[in-house]
Amino acid sequence: MATLRDVTLTLEWESAAPAGVVRHRDSLFAGGVDLLRDTLPGTVADSLMAAGPGETVTLPIAASDLPGAGAVFDMPVSGLQHPQAVGGEGVLRYGLYYPSTLFALPPAHQTPRTVPVRYLGTESGMMRLDIRHPLSDYAVTLSATILRAFDGQSDDRPAIDWGYRLLAGPGLQACWRGTETAYLFDGAYGRPDDSADQDFYAQARITAHIDQRAQRTVGDYYAGIIPPDGRILDLMSSAHSNLHPEQRFGSLTGLGMNAAEMTANARLTDSVVADLNAGAPLPFADDSFDAAICTVSIDYLTDPVRVMREVGRVLRPGAGFAVTFSNRWFPPKVTRLWTELTSFEQLGLVTQYFQHARCFDTPATASFRGLPRPPDDPYIGHTDESDPVFGVVGYARH
Image (cartoon, rainbow, N blue to C red; front, side, top):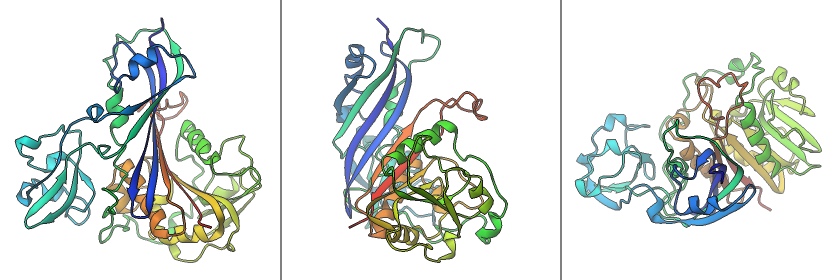
């Protein structure tokens, strides 16, 4: 019997937010899983042994499957060991996660170094901390879909804990029990280069900002919101719209900073040069589009909520707006806030943008990790994994 499997592991769960329930779907590609040697959550390994390609095994994630146990508890503010290492203004911000090494945790609350600590405020000289796994509050379902079953040897590599890889990150995007996370601080939208964006982007950059497999992942994600005959807005457009090659649409309007880049984009049917950080409204009438996309660019906006409101204005009611990003950016123009968050916390930040715009139904988040990097990719020597893709989608209110 073949014991190696290529598997997609997917977590599905919901969290409370000030504007309502947020749905989450986190996927990890697990290539060459050795069902006899590797570690998987719960009893999923036994179930996969009896399943074949195309079959899906589904089971709940129990508290015992999460790394660490932990609790919510209070400790003196003197327990913050390295205040100079705290981001933002140098103070802890409500609802954010910090490395456990920042705190002198008492013996009764020691936790694995890999489990972050969530700060929940200070009162009377005592900090409230949550040292449980970020998914501890939620009913989480794990689906494992077999893509391929094959024979092979995995003895030449250490056993892999796929449960640890899967559970490292999901949960960080949710606010604590429906209370908004304090992401912002003075200077949050400052950038290393605060000069005029039109000068920085004057030179065309005809390049892909994510690898080809990540582009396909983004295209598949967008396919879920793009109607085949719809009018689509490609916000912060460039030489690549990252749509699936077979994606159908009525029209695709690019709005970006460089005309030459958009001219090189064969998918665009028309384009507009505009600087979203200049504060002007989008140059489109109300209800002009049937969907909107924004790819690996949300981190450059200095007033993202204003832009979100404008997108909501130009979308017809019920139209989807999908924002995707990865873990790469242009350092001169990325906002300081973005660089201080992990990718999953960035999902939470973008979700909060949607909610603050107040013109979208409660959004949903998604993540796609671990897919193999294309062999001809120029970065194949640095990492075998494709660029991760993170997305948030919301729908314009009726």
